[in-house]
Amino acid sequence: MADFPTHLRYSVEHEWVDDATPATVGVTSVAADALGDVVYLELPEVGATIEAGTVIGEIESTKSVSELYSPVSGTVVEVNQAAIDDPAVVNSEPFGSGWLFKVEVTGAGQLLSAEEYAQHAG
Amino acid sequence: MTEKKTPLHAEHEALGATMTDFGGWMMPLRYTSDLAEHRAVREAAGLFDLSHMGGIAVTGPDAGAALDHALVGNLSKLRRAGARYTMICADDGGVLDDLIVYRTGEDEYFVVANAANSETVLVALLERAAGFDAQVRDVSARDALIAVQGPRAAQIVREVLAEDSEISGGTAFDELRYYASLGMRFGEEAVLVARTGYTGEDGFEIWVAAPHAVALWRALLAAGEPRGLVPAGLSARDSLRLEAGMPLYGHELDTTTTPYDAGVGRIVKLDKVSDDGTPVEFVGRAALAARAERAPERVLVGLRGTGRRPARAGYPVVQPEAVPSPDGSLGPRVGTVTSGAPSPTLGHPVAMAYVSPEVSAEGTELAVDVRGRAEPFVVVPLPFYRRERG
Image 1 (cartoon, chains in turn yellow, cyan):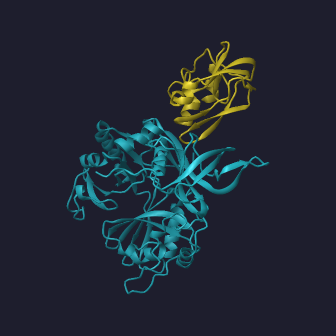
Image 2 (cartoon, rainbow over the protein chains, first blue to last red):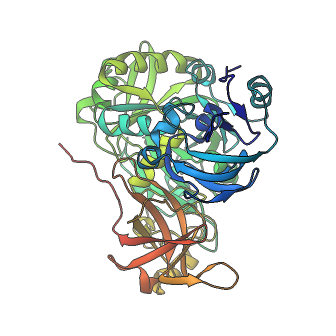
Image 3 (cartoon, rainbow over the protein chains, first blue to last red):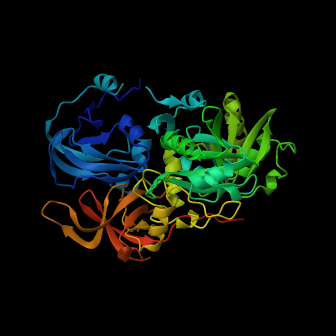
């Protein structure tokens, strides 16, 4: 079973979020591996209000399209333009430079610890 | 898991492949990265397990005549050791499967069918050969099929296999032509080598008796790795064939499609005759002859995306000025995407689609309804990618 960063929390839809202010959101290595090579990202715009558990964008790989869910509610304050320009970074560093966007959090959805997520992703 | 496993299943697992169900088989989708595997085939070589493909032997004095009756092509005229791309159609002209047929002897043919259709093809061939002095046998489980594809494929195969004049049929490996085959040796074992493929590159497909498949796979990997060969999965195979403009059954071809619709009417031999000169009333001939006379209702075209978002199979093709209608769909609709992906080689989205003839001309600007947004595409000739021949 894979080890996931313990300072992050996780959604069952395979997103992660940290506890900084603003919080950074990305997809997990499980999602990145399942997708295959990511070629296109559609992310919410800066200033958008997002709601935990709702579809806020798309991640497109060579083979398929997946919807992106928000793990938290709040306002988007920054998107990762480098990842939009070169989405391969989502595959190579999903927990690092492959982050997707930053959000001023007003509320969280149901989130899992690294250990719980590892069991979920098992 | 009820899916069947190929003789190379343990090799794929040891290589860490992501496996997927394909046509009832557990097959490698990718080993590491779809894109890296795709590029390796374009630039060096890729190694594919194709053992899921159906293999049917048709033998006997009337084998060629039986196939002339059963298929749309003229197989009795196929030269020894030659291969031919052909189709098996229903009475109404709809495609049951696309096939490659090898003539392995004077009275021996080998028919390769898609995994998902192999049972359908077997049943149809048994039925259609009934009146002929020919035997039809499913030999799928006997052999594994391994493909080496890419510009360095010839060097790699030459290092691993040996020529043997007793089984070669008189052809030297270096003189093997595209769509031709010869017998070679892997150690003591006889294998059948064909210069065929589904990637748009030079390459070879090798039939080996199942018990020797693992040893051959490892030998090809060992000889190939220093030359840039990597094992490649179905995901790369699909993007390679799409760039090469090759149809995939279930996408560009199905029972509602005729070979003419798919742009390969040239493989339908309406005028083929038997040895005594009488016309061959092959299965589907009447419907196909009528279809050949009619103007097409739809045309298979290539589409190049001018934006970044790829079209996918099933998405509607619409006029570029399309605006959302009250129900949320875009229109007016002029066609349907059958295959689509970002092209790793070309760097932009590519797709194949069936469209109305009036919007099928090269350069026609169209759009694809990509989940509610009109993404711009333009009609381009197929294939999208053609290798430079050295």
